[in-house]
Length: 203
DNA sequence: TAGGCGATGCTCT
DNA sequence: GAGCATCGCCTAG
Image 1: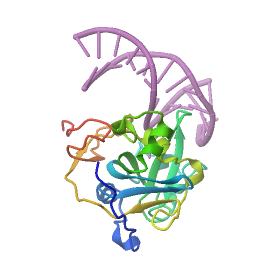
Image 2 (image 1 turned 180 degrees about the horizontal axis):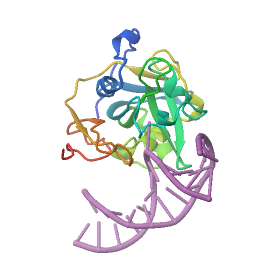
Image 3 (image 1 turned 120 degrees about the vertical axis):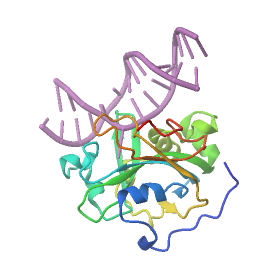
Image 4 (image 1 turned 90 degrees about the vertical axis):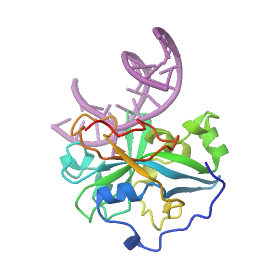
């Protein structure tokens, strides 16, 4: 947790990689910003997962559908879906148009609007506000209405430049059964706001 | 701190 | 009708 920083937008898409693994790493340390009539909430991305083209664990594996259409948009668009009836998950499309891939954002370190997050989440525990994909969507009020937004230019939901360059660790992805051995989860080493195991899984 | 488990509703077959 | 990229609550230690 750190005091409010100046969050700068990316000047253009050429400042980010158009490849899922590289983007999943690059997003660690960037800022996710939610502008709302009630004020701004934001957090530093500290944990992501890559869902690459041809990945059996990816929602895009079955082909394009009504739900997963945003995964097939040009890079850096929001893919938001509902899971288990109760939670939303936020992803960033990550490959050229039509390919079908995304990076799941799993955890944030709260940066701005912490009181609003506490209210939306119904807890005062700052460490738990955005620790988990469903929790961060609740804290930032992200739902299906934001699906498909262009995340470098949108006014309500956007990704800003990194506020630091963290040491990044890798592990298996969480909560999946297919292709579970692949080390496609990325996190900031030592950061207390990440959601799962803190260490590299055994090979 | 870690692990088990039920709630929950949408998407796709 | 099955299957979830989860969460919160409950135990045990």
